[in-house]
Image (tube, rainbow, N blue to C red; front, side):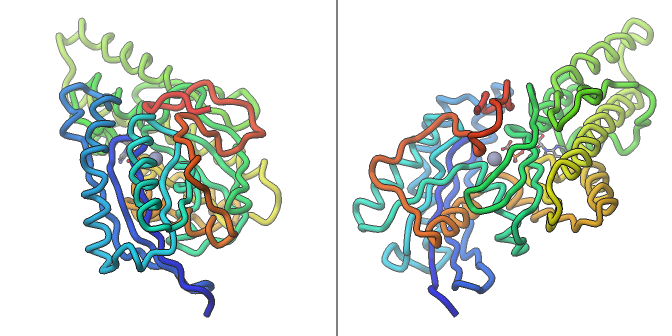
Length: 362
Ligand code: KG4
Ligand code: ZN
């Protein structure tokens, strides 16, 4: 067995303050020794979305606590670590800065190497942490802040095949929930309502289907949903429980169809030899969307890999793991590591127009 590496990871790019310890002996399966996520949902709830200034302060206050807890739960101290990995972007800059400054402090105090990790690479490499997936594979990242198809050819080799040109799908679920007076986060609430609804009652748009490629658009869906809701109001003076269920089911079917059809195209656009279709992000929790993607993978003869939800959504184990993979390749940063609000994974592909609640990220 090769060299054993123990890496501390820090994540603070959106609304979760997270720290984790991941260990791997070269050639062996990695082990998540701890994964602490201190969420900020309650702080942002009154504002109906993530408030960057509040997020930044909460990260600055809690990041050292998250580190302490992660080390204690893993049963290691700083001297047992080989390196410190931290999300250096993309994301809300105040939060990213809090993480990067904390990691630099730890690195300066201990002399441990510092590794900057791209948050999206963290998500994209997670199937290797959970399932030992070999390159190349296709990854659909679908959350409240991201939406893109990536071909993953190596630890630092990503090709963006397409992505949303406006809202992320999780954001569309959240806005739909808001329009229908359902609680946040909207995804689980809309999915629950949809169970009793008729997905064929409202013919919501499936945007960009006629356009070649894998780009997607979800912002028109909420307008269509708003119109459908408002058309019912004068008729009945309000919407019934059944109307709401039908609106949710029809909306969910539209998102599912777009993701499934574009996934089919992404598979067709990737070269031979893909090992799997993998997903990450909160939207991957949706049963109907998951089933549709699993079906698409099966049609192409590919395994479908969906990491457990706690590793699909934002966490620091994925950052520790991506850092570990970079470190094994001999890559590390130094004190000049910068926090970056935008940091496209694939510098060759054209920029996204928008990408969700964390703002456009290149
Ligand atoms: O990955 P995540 O925890 O955070 C980031 O956005 O980075 O994803 C959260 C998003 C929210 O927009 C939430 O509404 C959506 O994922 N989501 C779902 C479901 N569970 C969470 N969307 C659809 N169906 C679900 N079951
Ligand atoms: Zn994320």
